[in-house]
Structure formats: structure tokens, C-alpha cells
Image (cartoon, rainbow over the protein chains, first blue to last red):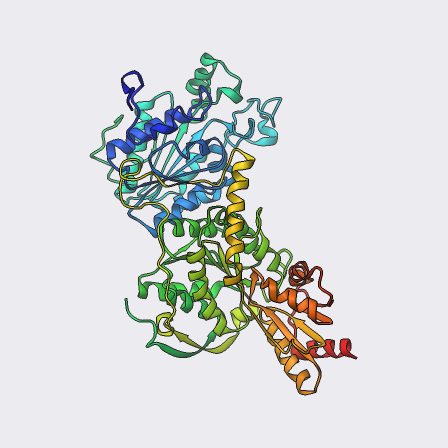
Length: 258
Length: 361
């Protein structure tokens, strides 16, 4: 990092030689991964983390960190990380996925891992559609939202309402689970949620799950102000930020908002 | 850890129980599994034995998860395995394609049942296509087709060694008959027979801080360029072709002077062997050839056979799944290729004998 004086400060756990990253301009993933990198740095766990990434745009994070990483299949990051954790409980396993991977094709894995109380951390970037494949409807697409498979807007009559995936996970997760939703619009809060989720895994309390509201101006076809309007106003109408489930007894040592 | 057996132990048990004991003897660390008949008792025996030997088990939500957690287990550096059958094997093809792409030493025990679809829970040899060549790939796998409980024990142990030595996903292909029937065999500690068990190694989570003390271990199955994939895959193919002669196994008898060679694998081979013994005693020139590995096949031996004998009869409890593999290798040979297909049903020695007599008449 010879020219770090003119570069924004990167988390220590980021892999410098793969920057600039591969995401589109305006993408929410790098902001989520920055918060995650900071949380890993603050917890000092870079030597123990194994990072799994799903297929879709989340895949582009495969060489984002100086972390041991595995690309999995669409929806299958949760079981790969579960398999690693069960075999080597000393490792800290993060399953990184999009809303399609977590709430659609891999929903049985996410819900079952939560129900079994797997001591892993799932992080799901919600951008309300399948971005890598060109912007199709996802379970999270908002009513009326135009996507490539709902060109006239999502009609709840024929395609249902946005899936309350987090409530679903939360409702089956056991006592020790930590479930929260953050947003790229509030990185401080998102980082604190991610840190608490990792701490929950480190203290072997139970499953931890963070959904992060993300942005996809490429497929949304939005300019900067429309993008922020979507993230800060339209998405929270369906997906409220905050801690949904905190282990009994809390996590005393961690302060809210980091 | 306490010893499993005092070197050797005579046993009379079901094939599923044999697999559980063999996995213990092979020092497997963890099994991931999902219920499906006829492999369930592998899990049942493993879950009873595992805690006594400090081993682990996870019951997953489906076979996709069983396969992908097995992948996680091997990447973490543990000897991990799963077992499945039929529609479960169908789902298992997705994770096993990832194992092929990343050269992961997964071990999967398949106890074949009837197909297609849910079909029967009983028996077949209809999972040859899928086990040998399934998934969206090139079938870079190793498949042992067993024919007895002793072989289930021997080859389950061997499967772990083969997988970790060559880093190709490895399968033990049994069937519902082998799974459920009882048979006598000798259990043993592999070391007592001079079998060296290969130690597993972690792909991920090695010592040191990634990027500081060592480069991060980052594993891909996705590529942007055709050429990237081509180069990687051709390297794998080259590796696979190189190991084929040392991995491929077969068994044959009486082929030198035979007018007819009967070909079959798995438990059907036992009917073939019994039929050939009877026919030979009656003075008929009949031999047998049995591929033990269905992937890779013993190519030079099959080529030699099909160039030398007049007639070959492929017998299987499927509609040509083995025959298709054999015919591909045999292309250019002069032997007439006859078939006896009984998809999803068992085959007796008497039936094979009658078919052979008809041919030789």
C-alpha cells in the first residue's frame, strides 16, 4: 500500500492486489464488504475466518479479502460453510449470498441451518432482484417494481408479495440466534450488526444472520438520487432495519452502533 | 482411540452395517447424510458407533446439503463422506460436480434402487450413468462397483485412500441387495493388512494469517474466459488419464479360449460367475469379465477382449447403462455384442446360464 496516503483506508483484511474491485459503480456489495472487513479487523479473526460466496454478484467477492475463500454453487453456500464448521468448529465461517441465493434457491438451507442453530454467520445482500443474470424478479422484488421478468411491474396477485425472509429465519432460529437487518445507507449500524453476528458465532451461542439492504443502479436503471431514494425510502417500507433477534442475556460487551 | 477390532473379526451383517464399520476402519471423521432407502442403515450404524470413536454426524435437510456439507468437511481437512440412492443420487450430482471442479476427495456410497424417479426402494443397477458420468461435467470420478460384503468393506476403505491420493470424487457403488442382505465377511484394521491410510489435509483454514504469513487459499469453480476453463479442465483430464491404469481394476476368468465372454458388474457378477462355473463344468467355453471400477474402466483389457473373442454378452439390471460404457471402449473390436437387460430386477445364475446356452446353441 505504497500510495495509501491518497487512497481511502481499506480494512486490513481486504486483499489489496484485487482492488479496484469487480463490482459495478454504485453497487452495494463493496459497502457491505467494507463493513464486514472492518468487523473482522476489529475482532482480530482474519486467521480463523473462512469466507464462502454464492453464485450471482456475491461471487465477485471471491478474491476480495485476504481470507480463505471458497466459491460455491447458487444457494449452496450455507451448507458448504455448515460442513466446514461442523468439521472444524474452531474456524469462523461466513456464508455470503444474495437474496436469490438465500431466499429462493437456497432457502431450505438457510432456514434449516437457522433451525439447527448452526454456529455460522450468513450475510445476505438484498438488492430486490437477480442482478448477475440481468435483473429478473427475486422473492424480494417490491410490488410494482419493474424487472426483466416483471416488465410491467411485479403483480402480487400472480407473483406474491416480497418474501419476509428475515422473519422466516428469525422465527425458526433458536434462543442463541442473532438476526438483524442493516443497510448500506447506515454503514456504522451495519458494521455493528455484522460484528455482533460474528461475536455470536465466536461465543458459540447459535446461528447468526444479517440481511443488508443493498443497491443495484445497473439493473434498477436509477441515477444516484433515485438509487438512494430506493434504498432509504422504498426498501425499508418492506424491509425494516434493526435487530430482530438477540440471544437471551444479550451481548453485553458490544455497544450498539459499534 | 480404541481399536475397532483385534486386527481381524469375523462378522455376519448387512452391507449397510459393513459400510459404517469400513468408514470407521478408514478413519473417516464425519458423515453427513439424508434419509433415503436403501442406504439408511449406514447412518443408523454410524450414529450408534460414531460417539464411541469420537466421530461426528450431521443429518442435513436434503441430499444437496448432504453433498455440499461433505464438500465443506473435506475442504476443512477431514475425511468426510455421505451415502445416498436413487433420487438422492440425482440431487447428489450437483455437489459432486463441484467436487470434480475443485478436485475434492469426497466419498459417496451409493446403494442403487429402482429408477427412474422414485421407482422402487429395492434394487437396480440403474445408477451407473449418473454415478459414473453425472453432473454437468466430464465424469472425472472414480467409481468402485462392489459385489460382496467383503468388497463393500475393502472398497469403502480403499475409496477414502483413492479420493485423498488422487483428489477426484470417489464413489462406492452398491445396491439394495448388498445394502440389506446379511453376509459373512472379515472386518480388519487396514494397518494389520499393510494398508497405509492416507492422512487428509485441509484446503482451507491452515495456520497463519492469510495475506500476511501466507497467500489466502481461494478456491474457484467459476471462470470468465473459455480458455481459462479449457486449460484447467485439460489439466484435470491429463491427470485423470495418467492415473487410469493404476486405478482401474477388473476381474476375469476363462476368457483365453472362450467362445462367449459374459460381462457384468456388481452383484450381477456373482450370478455370472456361478453361471460360468456351471457352464465350464459342462465343457462349454465360456468366460467372464467384470469391471470393478466403472470409472475409469480397464480400457486395454476390454479392447483386448473385444478384439479376441467371438461373442460377448453384457448382463445388467439396467437397460444398457454398463453396455454403453463397454461399447464405447470396445469400438473397433470384432466381438459380437449381445445383451441381457433386466432394468430394476435381480438376475439369477440360472437365467444367465439359460441365456448363454441359447447363444451357444
